[in-house]
Amino acid sequence: MTIKLIAARTVSAVAVLAFAGVAMAQAPARPAPPPVTHGAPTPGVCVYNMPAVITDSVVGKFVTGRLETIGKTVNAELGAEETAINNEAKAIDAAARAPGADEATLQKRAIDLKKRAKAFDEKANLRQREFNATQQKSRMRILQEVDPIVVQVYQQRQCSVLLSSEAVLLNNPAMDITPAVIAGLNGKIQQFAFDRERLDQPAAPALPVKPK
Image (cartoon, rainbow, N blue to C red; front, side, top):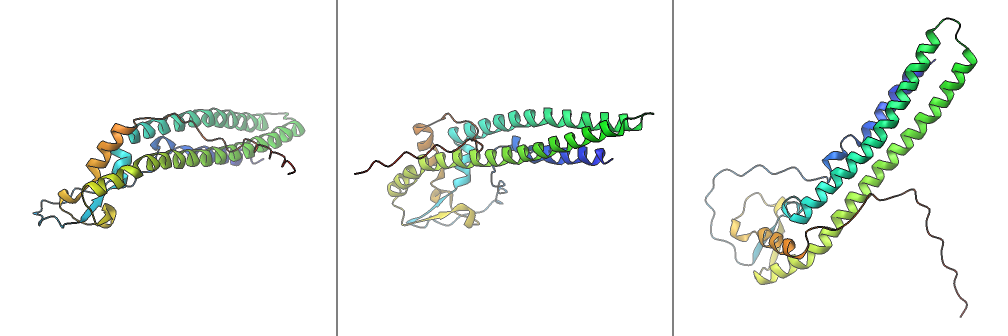
């Protein structure tokens, strides 16, 4: 029988969400630039670090923590199922080695276990997609809240052009509007309720169109 192969499949499936505890997919932190003497700020040119808003704002930290909690909950759910499936695989393997094993019974258990493993793989993939959707939706909520603040600070600083810090190697800190944007976001919102997106829910039926 191929029971051990079935057990190996379950391990790979649950590993899909093993990294979910990292929560929001953050851009890797840029290394601190070496000591440098900056020239005078360029009038009208401003710099903005959007990833820093996610990592440093109060609401961004809340979302990151909430996503970590959701990821741990999902991992606990999948981990329990993985353990049960692997234990059954070991039990079948042990029974198959015992003298007088009932081949028909063991074969049925193996088939049933293969179905469980397949269903487990599908659930793990679904949970991963749900987690990704939750992460994207929560991040979009932050961006919706911060966009008007960026425009406001841009106008207050009399910027003529706004550059992403990810596209700028070095810049005079006086040109960076990120701290002001984060301060504005902290004063506007610090958290909001959200849970894991459910992608297995049936779509709501379309309302009938009333004749005019």
